[in-house]
Image (tube, rainbow, N blue to C red):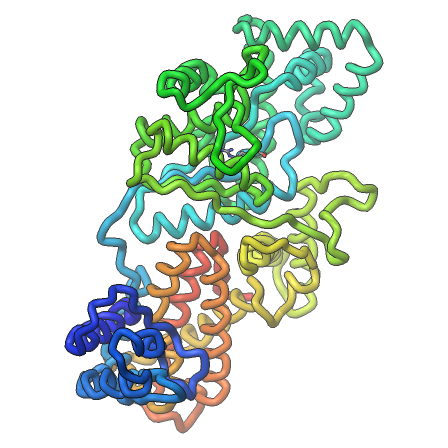
Length: 566
Ligand code: ARG
């Protein structure tokens, strides 16, 4: 479909006729219904080039495109805004597309290989709310790209290397069988290990020895360490499975897996004269910045940045990625800026490779403070998810009667869905204010609202099972129906916009508009009520089906399940 690009082409052709060859033409969705469906506001900027006034230019464009049967109205407003209204027959003719299994969204004509680096927790610390955001946003981005046809390689760049591991494996060894249950709370485990380290000289000595042995490749130490990592990954996997995100062992490509490549990375930079020694450390300097990127410490140790450079090399040269997305907290933006610039200089990332830091803000509580437990500790993700499911259960069971099995399924789907939707529905760059009431609200831009809308349409469609739909295209009998049908058809433009910006909130914004429009439409235009003409009934059913299909498809991309009944 891509209505927007069709319109852009029409305007571009018209401008060509007027002697303009600008390639920078943007048609946008109208901000208000009275401005038509789409707007072109470029006439103002062209006034100089064409030595004419904007209104005149807009009029000229209007004269050229008016005859195109795609439009029912082309008008000029204000200083030179071009308002475009689409012909109902054009919308009606295209609607059946939205009923197919991809809700009318075609795959990209130029699929590429994309690495999405997300979740990536540190094994020495509890997976915290920052990783929850990365996990949820990252998974949606991977789903979206995949849906549009790219080949996605999910990479969970877990932090499993560093001096803390000496202490952790010493403690892990000491606790033998009990370690597993203790590890379910890594924060606690870390604290206890640290307490031993501080209080017990023998333990501290052993921990330090383990670090050296680990780095030297000692077999016993390595096997202890990998047992520790495996156990703590199991806990992460638990969270992934509960959330239903598509991360498993195959996505894990840990920091330590790059250990053997790090010396070569430093050599690559040295050879090309990109890095220099400064106070015995190997540094890469950037123009206009006093902070170099350090890739090797004076004691010979490598750093987080060195590993990230090795990872870029691997991702471009071995995996063949053309776009690499890092779904990581905004606080690391300086790190990524430097790492990306260094990777370009050394040639790990050529110009045809896009490197993107998909940054997101921090999670705050309602009073605007960092999200913590009551006593100031880190909130365990498992607890957060459980709480969401519990709250969903309370709300749902107040509304209706369910069998226990049904209630569990609904509570889980709504609980997890709400947690995800709330995170995805705000611009990822902003800080995210976590608010249970808002998140589980029945109306508003929430998962529950969308899941209700879907279930409601589903129940209408179920009741209409016996209606044979012979009508192929909807009738589009009033303005609301026209706008609703058009909204359905803009799913593809919406998803592509979300794709370019890697911004899931564009999808939730669309969903909210779509569902709200449908509710309004349904209120004014009953479907199964007595007296509704047969053709009209069929037409409205077609539209309802397409709305349900668009909702289900979009929620699926967001990793949220629909419910046939709530
Ligand atoms: N482990 C890091 C952290 O928790 C995030 C890693 C992100 N990915 C990367 N390639 N640096 O802060």
